[in-house]
Amino acid sequence: MSDTDNFSTPRTIESLASAVTELADEVYLSLGTIGTALTGLWNDLTEKLRRAPRSTDLAPLGETIVGELERRGRLFDGAGVVMADGVLSDRRLYLDWWLSNPAHEPQRHTVELNPQSEYFYDYTAMDWYVIPRDQGRRWVHGPYLDFACTDQYVCTFAIPVRTAPGSFLGIAGADVPVGAIEEALLPRFRAAGPTVALVNNEGRVILGTDPRFPPGSKANRRDRPAAGVPIDTIPWSLQLLGSATPH
Image (cartoon, rainbow, N blue to C red; front, top):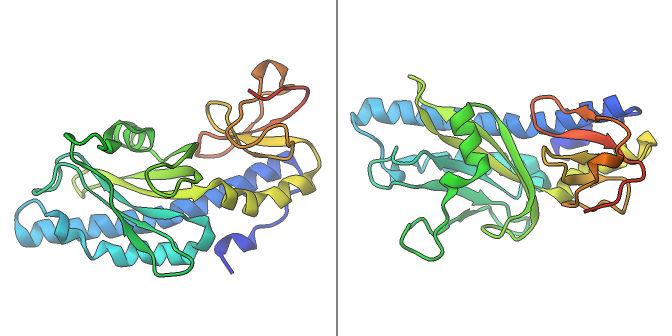
């Protein structure tokens, strides 16, 4: 049984918002665990080595990341840390990212981080990295097709990680499949009664009870009867759907 199985059944749109917040908090709880492990390891390494750590020095993080992947089950496709540009002594860019695999042990994922390569994965330009870095707050990006990892529709959750003096160290993040969000929340949405959708800050549908609005579609804001109910601490909201047509 995963931690998400313990959520109560909502009966109003406000309680639906609480259920979404509860799910997001579970994700961020795991990211906090990973981020704390990175900060603790970094502080120990810099004190012991008297120099900036190398990428290989971060190997002990794998145990914490894999532990959170196993704890969350189907809720996480992948999780890990993505390091700040130039913070390591041997690599300008580096990530320690692990993919969940129900049939086997989680596997470490690699991407092309050479800027000269045509397949260069420039994470420093991505919202889930930029916003935690520049604004110092948690963020969630998506839904989007994750071509770099699993080719699934996902939302990437991220938090900033800082050194003890407060310098940006990187982000702790997790890819959460839209299918896992639906599995956790859609029965509660349907039980609540109204035709409602969970949308991101751009009005893109994450999940909803109206088949006209599949994940990734965009509802017409002009036809919405109300401003919606915001979700605490993340840029999502619940929208009651009226006569809108998807875009």
